Image (cartoon, rainbow, N blue to C red):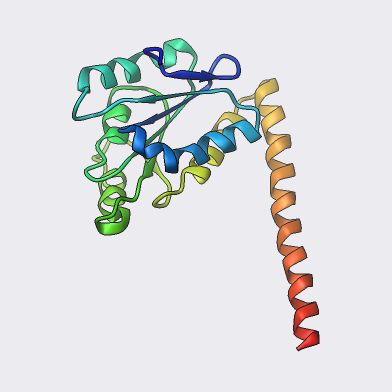
Length: 179
């Protein structure tokens, strides 16, 4: 893997980083979401505890390489999202990765309880898919073609969610009538 992580389709706009490759089982949902919206991203392992200088170098250099949002997932002590946020000017979205102990509550509290001046937007435990959606929405705030394209795609996505709920409503009503 290259120092900046594995690149996915085009110049990456989102950095998708995690503390360990074992976090990929959760974090891949962010990648799938970004792919669904045609947002190029890169992935990489940057441990706040085992490779702190490498992690800081990544965070400090991300904006200069064209990254606009970083999604950082970690379990346990979960220092990665906060440490990345402390070293970059970019928005950071933290994903608490659930582990077998405490079901990710330790990760959630570690990520969400950041000191003043070091914000990390935090999604639910294991909520990497929502982290991807939040990254897309952040990019959709762009006033250019990218933002316009992503706002249109997000509106279509939301319409699709509404249609799924309406379909479930109709199916439930039919089942209830048969009971």
